[in-house]
Image (cartoon, rainbow, N blue to C red; front, side, top):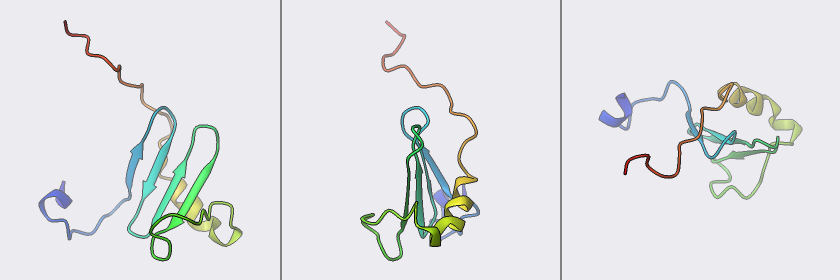
Length: 88
């Protein structure tokens, strides 16, 4: 994991995070794209909106970047972890 050794290392792919079943976020240096299980989407340009006040997901001018980031979404969600340990 090169970025742990040197945070200045350039990323070759975005960071992908998942929260609960079917909710995912794709983060690059400049953008965050969020896709929810119910089909809702959010897109933020962190260069001009670091606090994520202006959702650009439905803005026609930003459909190319939305589609580009959406390609990184997992094709299927992994099973959820149990909330309690199975150990006694």
